[in-house]
Image 1: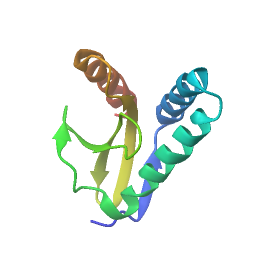
Image 2: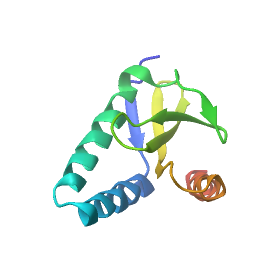
Image 3: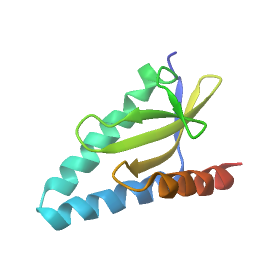
Image 4: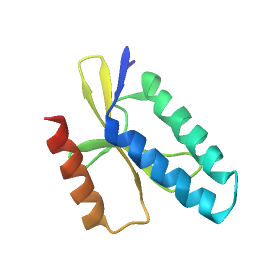
Length: 106
């Protein structure tokens, strides 16, 4: 399905900023690469929205270059990005973050 629109929740910007800070803490400049890579992955949802498997009730696209997942929903022709989360975290934490983000969306 091609998504005509891409809606990114405000929390996603916070998720991306936290990931950027984490990688910048490891080596300067990696944070910018992380941010640019994840934004490109999110943009690819315009072409690939809806083809990914569902986890915790949302579509989950794995980031291409980092151990992160992009969780999203599809409503008609709009892909709605709910969260960008580090897959190295405890699954219970991931579920909690998604529940928080979904509650803020509804």
